[in-house]
Length: 513
Image 1 (cartoon, one colour):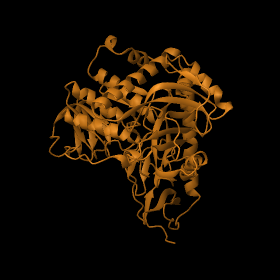
Image 2 (spheres, helix red, strand yellow):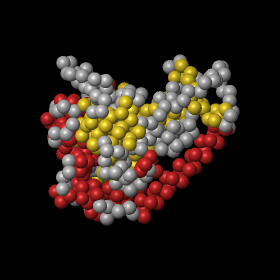
Image 3 (cartoon, one colour):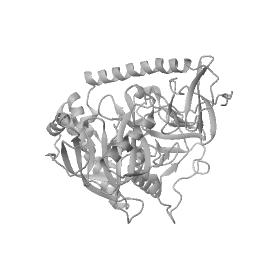
Image 4 (tube, rainbow, N blue to C red):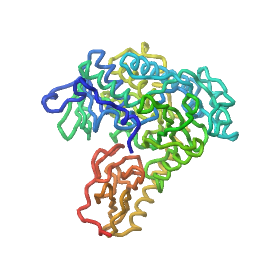
């Protein structure tokens, strides 16, 4: 699955290398002011603000810049976010909603200013939180009535071919290529004197003085650390129990008649996100981007069916649509409904975190960078932006605890389901056909065998985080954990999630067909 954004990237002729090697850059015993883990929107915005303030900063990225959610999302930097605001209002006072909106507006402004100064194309479009049927209009009304201070308006009709019963509209929102944005941020950071190290998976952090970050290549030391990895990989704060992972799919199509410009997101199910984006051929009409069908990783029988449903939906309302790209992205929802940003508990005041953006990581991620950098730089409390003070003093509500408990119950159920599934398929197993993976049990231990690109691999199918039994993702040929969203490729290499270690290979080969 290749994203449109990655495919649109062009070689940077004459540009200096984006990253440096660990050897020769980081000397034994060297100490940075701040070490940032993760080269996505949160990590790079924080790092850029800190290095511009004169700090010595290193960014440690486990794979490469923008490899996951920051470079794979729909590219909507919008403050109108489907039904998010009404969800926050249902759990928190109106002041918290306004604080969340102000944070996202600040993040949006930062993105717009950065893009303008670094040549990242951005289009201003109207965002629509729309209902697909009359039954969904109550969700539109609730979003319209939220006391958020936004200049929203009600729209009854739009010239679009897909089901549209009415919407809340907010003009002046941003549409962009998120991968282009994140790479530009990385280049700006390096140009300012920051050090960016790709292929540096951090496997542990010791909150000493200095903070020590353990990687396979050595230990990196800094006065402070920022964990900006989608979901924090440190168990000390139990964020994995406060977050709900969600994976959704995106498709790009050539169509004869693209819809009116706008950033569309349904407030009722099934979720449909619709926008247009430039074709790879500058002379061609814009592509249609359709996304949705989100689910918790590892908890559906077939992920491929979710992708095919998006393709079928597009063909139904845009006859003759030609699929050009398909990909997926994963983010995490906070049980608090508000992102977790700030000091990490039990981090001795030296570790910061940003997570739980609920699929709105562009504006929330940049806002997190503003907040974290101001705290690290020691901006006095009274001089910090008002929304930082508002969100920094909110309390946990009973509804937050209920959401966390419900997700915990679902995790407990999937622990039992996973082990039962494996035990129902004793070894040996036949070699799977191309693109498929199966679970089996040998001596009570689950293992997974898959065939991808003609190669059959067998791995111990138990997540290296907390021992969940992995499930095969037939859309992306990966092993996904139904507990907290860790993912591994067919050979067992860790891709994302709270897990930090790869899967061990199964030494015995499966029986061939």
